[in-house]
Image 1 (cartoon, rainbow, N blue to C red):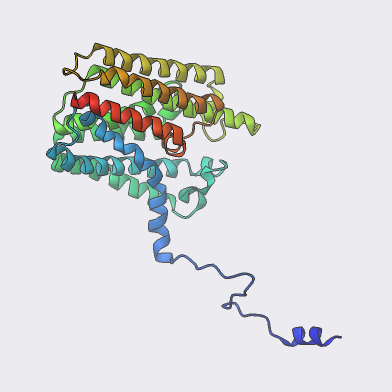
Image 2 (cartoon, rainbow, N blue to C red; image 1 turned 120 degrees about the horizontal axis):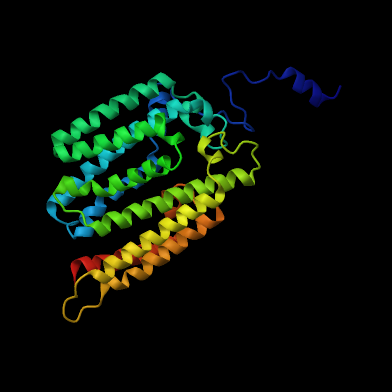
Length: 328
């Protein structure tokens, strides 16, 4: 036996509390914080960006920078965030078993066992009750009714409507539309018919593109049962979902262009900002359709935030639309 071997035999192994240089021991998460952090992750903070749609109605009416609007919008954002969080908590509690079979959803806290199913149900129910009550006290009855309708519709979706053909697409689309509408009743702003049509078709376009992408992804991964994690994917054909998102994209573009061309004249010497805003709007739809056609249009917020050209087109449209509203 060599001297080195003898030294190794004599040296005691590191104790359970000692981290070696090659494998540093990770710092454990405090047990007291594990459950609150799991609940926060279940509430999907990344998807809260969708709730900025509450600014759509006042922006379309040119009231975005009024004092009362700036005071009310953060509250509306918070109320829709708590309402959406309630739905996510209940949804993940109901789908925990199915989510464990999904390559991505298996990491959700409820499916992974970090948040017990009864706790997720209780937290979701508490938020679902408190949100309309807070809206009635802090805003007005119309806003509370709209939030209550959103919660009832989305919870019904979690329970059964997500298994009904076409209705599932309509419910998810309506969720986006209600976000865009809520600034109207909350601030006393009348909602234009063109605003509602464009927002509705735009939301359906993104929802159908996401469903189509899920179906394409399942086919690429050659899953034996493409409906294992979303049963209705068995019922929808790829051709039908493609037809829906193409139809919705055309409807959104047509409604927006009709609104822009129908608007009145501009101030003396001003450019036709409304008509010019059609260009980036159409480009944005075409750019988004690229991801839909590839089957890579996941959640809308991921597509919008990760694609730089789409973000630039969106900024250009925002500038032109702002000039149109200001009528300069």
